[in-house]
Length: 127
Image (tube, rainbow, N blue to C red; front, side, top):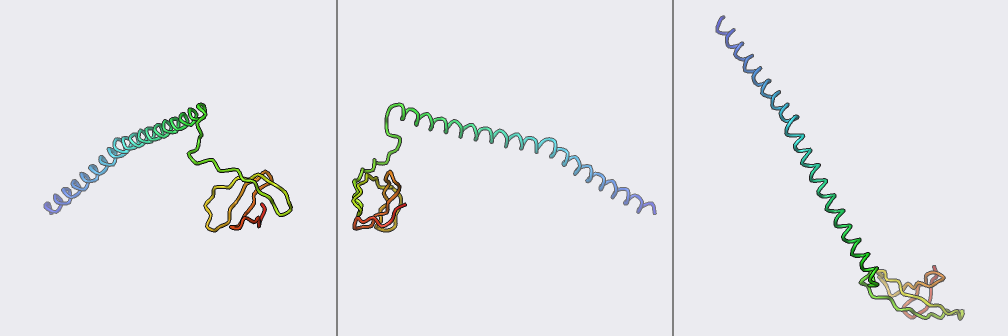
C-alpha cells in the first residue's frame, strides 16, 4: 500500500510540474512574445504608411512643378478640334472623346453635349 501511495504522489507531482510549466509558458507568451510581436507590427505599419505618404508627396510635388513650368500634365496627345455640320444646318465645334470603342462609332463632345457619329460621318444620336 505504501508503494501505490508513493506512485500516486509522484504522478500528482508530475502533473503539478506540467501544469506549472504550461502556466509559466502561457505567462511568458502573453507577457513577452505577444507584446513584442504587436510592437513589431505597429512599427512595420508606421514605416509602410510613412513611405506611402512620402511617395504621394513626391508625386504631388512633381505634378505641381509640371503645372508651374507650363508643361502639359498628361502624356496623351491633344485631340483635334472638328467642325461638324448637322443635317438641320447647325454648325458645331467638337472634339473626339478618347474612350475604348468596340465598333466604328465615334463619340464627340460639343458645347451642347455629346454626339454619336457612325462610320459614314452621320450623327445618329445626341446625348
